[in-house]
Amino acid sequence: MELNNIEKLIEKYFAGNTTLRQEEILHQYFTTQKVPNHLQCYQYLFGYYKVKRQEVFEKPVKIPNKSKMPYYKWLSVAAMLIFVLGVYIISQKPAKTNKAQLLADYQTTQQALQLISKNLNKGTYAMAQLQEFDIAKNKVFKNNKK
Image (cartoon, rainbow, N blue to C red):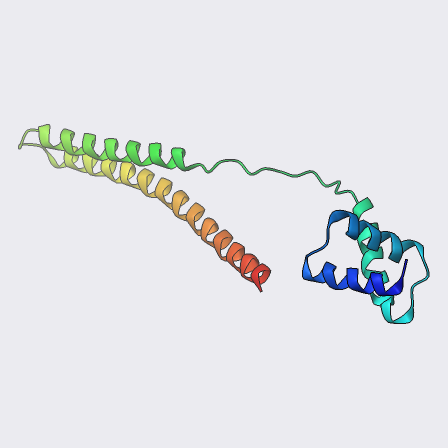
């Protein structure tokens, strides 16, 4: 193939105006023939493409599970029901109660609130991990755009 024709095809290739057939001609020229010195940099480029076409990705892809948001929704509903039930039970008690009963009710309420706090802290921890993931994701995509 004429050197002049190859140089024109290279210009069209980098302008993005070549057809698939013309690109195949370039690939064949640079991978099968001895190339002049001023075009050897393109020989490395097309040789790289030839090697990478034969490469196969063998690592299995893991698809992440859906978020556990429904679990947290049910947790918040259960916490609200416990709270409402506690308020209802306290409001139904007669005004005359002894100190021992008040102390028992106080401890029961305290235990219920500790349970709610424990479960809400789990959600806070999960949200912190999610924020770290978002920060890392934003760094990666910002680096890819530049």
